[in-house]
Structures are given as structure tokens and as C-alpha cells.
Amino acid sequence: MSLFITSLNSGSNGNCYYVGNEREAILIDAGISCREIEKRMKRLKLSVQKVKAVFVSHEHSDHIKGIETFSKKYQVPVYITTTTLFNSRLKIVKGLAITFKAYEPVTIGSLTITPFPKFHDAIDPNSFVVDCSKIKVGVFTDIGLPCEHVIKQFQQCNAAFLEANYDEKMLNDGNYPYHLKKRISGGAGHLSNTQALHLFKNYKPAFMSHLFLSHLSKNNNTPQLVKDLFNTYKDGVEIIIASRYEETPVYHIQNFTSIDSKIKPVRTTPKQLAFTFA
Image 1 (cartoon, rainbow, N blue to C red):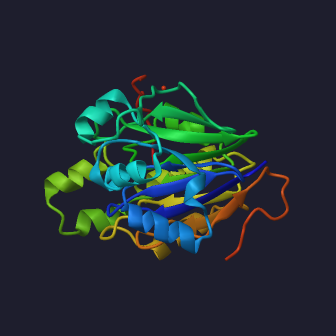
Image 2: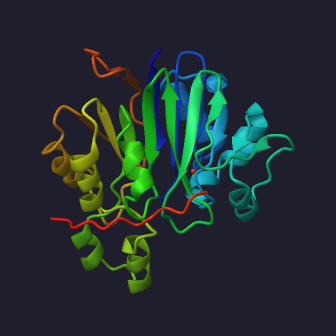
């Protein structure tokens, strides 16, 4: 068995990632409207009926604004931590909100979803690794810095959605107010291109086949800049930009011996690790 993955949208205007196999699928976050989820999945020839759950990383609106309608319409359970549910003020249909805790795996059919903690300025933020027959896909976005949990999980992934939010020079030279620049780069906001590249260069496993550069800033990054940066060090990994305006193609993730792996068109407080970025 293998996994099919796509980014339905990635950025401050909405985040939604699809991971599934031939029988069932999940969404990580639903920060775009139910209608947009339906339209984009239809264009990709993905069945909404296969979606068996939505997992919520944290309460920020660009990760949750489509959840209420999608969950109610399709009677899909929403997996969310207790404190995130409270702070999000989401009104989930009774019985469809299911709580989880970091490092307590959740089984959805033949998918195993493992949440793990991260640094971000939310009440109880988690990222996720989805496992199916020992094929693993990780979603690593909205991360202030690469803590020990992020590094450990990244090293296990055949494919990953990795945040590369901002270019340091563009952020520093841009017109954002100081407090916003500090929020983005202060260790509980977002990963810079340099931080993401450091993680990729030093901790990518030999069997990683696909990397989706995700949650790019509209004002402080460009797709070409970050793709050129990562292509220099890709070493056989396919680099894809997860757009803030449209869905990516669906990619077929298999094990590292696959010849053609693309379809064409836990609450533990994370410890900060010290890095020196060249």
C-alpha cells in the first residue's frame, strides 16, 4: 500500500493538506472553505467521501475556518486537543469532536496519525506524521524553530510538507512593523528559508522522495527564490512548492525503491536546540 498526498492550499490565507491511500484519507487542517476543498479535490479527481477525519494543528483561523461546515456536511470527525478546541471557539456537531494528545497515535482505517508538539504561538500546537504500511508523510508547518521533536519525526519521513515561510533579508528590509517581524522570527512563529534548509540538509533521511515547501509568505518570500535554494541540495528529492493560491498535483508516495513515485497531471514541552546557521 502507498500514500497519495497533495496540498490543497498553503499559506496565511489558508492551509489544508490531504493524505490518503486507496480506501481512506484525512485532512490536516481545513483553513479554506468547504466549497474550495470540494472544488480542488474534484479537480484532482479525489473523492471527498474518502475523507474520514480532519486533524487540527492549532486554533489560528488560517487552519480552521472551513472545519465547521466541512465536518457538519460530511459528518466527519474533527481530531483536536481539548485546549485548542476551547480556544478556537469552533462549534463542532456533538459527537464529532474527538480529542487527542501528543504522541498518542490515532488509527483511521489503515492510517496511523501521530501528533507531536512544536514551538508556535498557539495554545497547544501539534504537527503530525501519517503512517501507512511503514510509509510516512509529515506535516511540519507553523513551527518557530526545529526542536528535537520536529527533527526526530522529520528523519522518519518518506515525504514531508516543510515550512519555508520567509527570507530573512526580505523580512528585515520589508515594511512589516517591528512587533510582527519579531513575532515571525522570534522562535515561536515561523521557519525561515535558512532554518528549513538546515533541517533538510542535515536531517533528511536517505529514503525521502518528496519535499513540499509550504506556508510561504506572500510578502517575505518568493517561490522561485526558495525552490532555487533547495534544488541546490535536493540530492534526488523532488522539490515542490505548495501554493497559497491553488492545489498541487497529487503525488504518489511509495518506498525508496520505487522507480516512479509521482502521479503526473506528544503534551511534552519541546526543548530548544541550539543551531548555528551558515
